[in-house]
Image: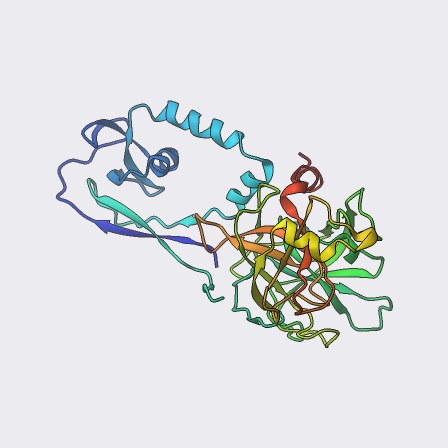
Length: 361
């Protein structure tokens, strides 16, 4: 679930009721009383304790640095320098702040993050079942050739906006009809399903080599966000520093086995490029390119498998561990759960293309 802000008040003696524009004491110097909506970004940026001047029915009035306008301008300039996908990430994940009507003048407010998501740090073959709302971006792609037949979920994906799901290009086909979100079990009716409006495979995708195996699926309806349905963010660089990565999906639990139907997760290791090339040096047309990465489990027994294609390879955001960053897309492998690592598409290498399709950047 999204992070909320738990506001804890440590009230001091009331001296005056300072109004907006009045002087106040900010640290060891002089400040000015300003509405929290305006001053909040400054206080968060400098990680200052919040001192209440007064309050209105609309919001708290807080003590702000006298140069808050120039500070705000600098913050906006820094925000403008972010990529479109990172700005959207911050927008989608922005927590809701709860203001208490009982705020007293000259009180100090300490804001503490209260987790409202389900996750753990345990280390879909060899994996374990995911928890409710642990992967709120997880999507299942449904296919149906005949409208009289049931939908079959054959690929995964990641919700990255209110209209788009990120997946593998080899998952795109005419029979792709449905995006399913907020589901721990594909057999359950407790989920949200959206009709597919359009699909966008990378223009340089090769079905033979699986190079540039990345695509976007657009839903007809705008997806409303909730505790169990929320976009993930995109990793911002092609090279991934982290060695432990988490894959999730509804795929088979054994090689060529039946689909799990239950959302599974597994922690995998990133292989260095030289080791990866040793495994795939004889792969012919499927030679590795820089935009692919090798991930698996050295001892075997953990892996993604059939049905996990298009699903996310992810890490938690260091600033907010209720948010995941998508670093890779499940592309292909040689044998589920074996010692040979699977191949994933590096998401960070395709940011310009993703942003141009999703946000028109």
